[in-house]
Length: 307
Image: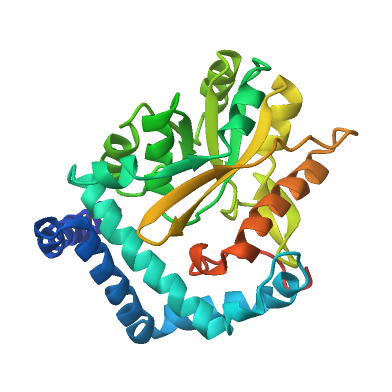
C-alpha cells in the first residue's frame, strides 16, 4: 500500500513537472521585460481565481495590519488588505517568470541588473573575520537577489530545506549553486555552517518560515507570536559571527539588494531577545514594502490560539 501510494505521488510530481515545462516554454520566447509584465498580469488573474489562497492572504494581512500601522515607516497609501494582497499576487507572478528565466539560463540580465546597496555594512562586518550571517526573508525575488550577491561579491551559502520531491531538490540545487553561491541543507547543517563561518564566509538564512516546535521558540512577529528559528542568535553567540540584515526589493523593472547595519546580539546572551531583534529587522522591511513579502504563506501556523 505504502509503495503504491509513493509511486502515485511520484507520478503526479512527474506529470506536474512535464506540465510546468510545457506551460513555461512561451516565457522563453519573450524578452524578459515583456515576459515579466505578463507574469504580473497572470498574478493579478490568479488573485481573482484562487479564492482560498486570496482569502488566506487577505486574512494574514488584516491580522497584521494593526501592528504595521503602529510602526515607523507605515504609509496609509498602501491601501486596504485586499489591495495589498492583489499587488502581492502581481509581484509573485513577476517573480515566477523571472525564476523560470533563471532556470533556463535566460536570467543573466536580471542578475546583472540588480543593484547592491549598503555593501559597506557587509564589508565592515567581514573585517572582523568571524563570518557573516545574513538575516533575510521571502521578500521581492529572493532567488534573483541571492544570485546578484554571488555575482557581484564573494558569494554565500544559503541554508534551505530539502523538497519532498527529490528531482525538485536537485533542480533548485543546480539553480542556487550558480554565481558563486552554494546550498547547505537544514538537516545536519551545523558542521558546514561552522566551517564556513570559521573561514570568514557568509551564510544566508531565510528567517520568516514557521519552524516546528522544538526547532525554535515562539517570538513576536507582526503583533503575534510565531514559531521562529533561534539558529542565527545561537550561531552568533557561539562563533562571534556578525548578524547583517539584507533584503531585496523591486524598483520599477529592476531589483535592489540592500544591506543594513549589523545587529548587536542581546547583551545578556538571551537567544530569544536576539531573535526578537532580528524579527524587528524583517518587520522594518515589510512595513515599507508590504506588497513584496510572502503574505500567501501562513507565518503563524501551529501557534496555539491563546498566543
